[in-house]
Length: 639
Image (cartoon, rainbow, N blue to C red; front, side):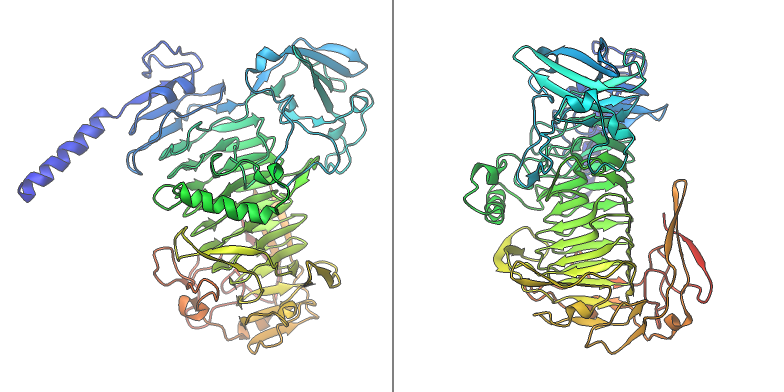
């Protein structure tokens, strides 16, 4: 065939695919027996999901859809997707709940409803206890995946009917008045009974909903690739604990697939996790609970080997885009992923009010919790009041964490656990009581603002490292600590100091500056940092500014949906001799021998600041803001 013939054939194929693509419409006034056109729409998204083929779009019109959408298939490529889109003609909601009426007053403000178990089908959230590897029911409350809502606000579950009859503020709840709105459940072979204290509200005259479905949007099968979900509000799902050694089912999740785009959605009120980019069930399902004789770290290493055997690679898994979503009121994570978030991007998400009820806990709770963040970009996200902000647990290699805003987090803003690197953390604002919990090695921290403590405790567990930009495991190696780079950061003492304590036969050290790394086992690379108000420099640092008596009076001001950072810097910040940090300056992480570079192996330059402004090429400023005003109070919009 001639070159011209080949081009004509390619054009013909493209025209054929485009002509075959269909647009299906869904409306609350439709019928699944219709043909799915704009004038003759389907009633359920699920029906459209059953028939949509690669290239098709499902347009969902305004209304509330109480269903679990289970995509029957995905697209074929990034350009040949199946897209689920809100029509933009009003709020389009998918809820995992149902409205419940028929409440009978039980005693005082306490009401009771009886629901046949057949109402729930195969999944009854009021029989399903939350459980899983690393889950902790530390209050012994035996929480269920179900939930009760009064006019859209969730009540507090209790394991004692006495707390419904005579409610008192639930232990550590931040909303003490709201926590007296309680509910309790019990079941027998035929029925489920829910008791709730609605105070002075009549539940038969108000909107009362309960979680029924375990998810709002989640494929039953793996390998459901190249799906777009955009413009929805999704809420009220009875999600189960998402352990890294189990299938992670979120309110919306990808189930071990590739190439999803999850964008411009509002996601809230998941009993456990909001968005999951997790692994499959076949490679392990809560294996530590099934065999507690071996440690959880041993089990996870075995899960990784199984995943590689099942095709865990860039060709089959990850490469998702999660952007511009608002996520709140989830009690485990706003977003999590074990092995399934590789090569993805998490950008410009507003994540807040995670783990606020605190009726249970465990080692998998955070705003964003990722295992195996290989070549993962986490950029321009806000994480506030999420307990633990960003948690990069195992195999942060090629990870880039940049321009995120973290504050009001009770545990820490960034937790790097048992990673060998290289991972890059630049131009972030860390304002919580603990800015960084470093249990790793091989990190590069550039142009950040730290106002909380840094806690260093290298963990001796043996964890994998990989070939550069690949899931393929090279070997397992224990952690020693160090091999970090700290260039052009600002450190400020913001909270009372904590004394040094011992942990896991290592020294856990804490402070507001880099003196805690003075005895790191592996080499440290430190230059161009500023230390204010009690923060202390690294002993080997030559080019730095230390002014322990100066207080920049840094604080956050929330004004509606906008967030401002207010502070005053002294003029000495302009006298520091810094340089633009590049791949060449950062070198290679010792254990994997990998450079700090872009995923396509090109060199990187940290030549823009938090807001995206270009840095001075000859004399860039330390911290996340290039060329700030000095000597007077500044108020910068940071979200």
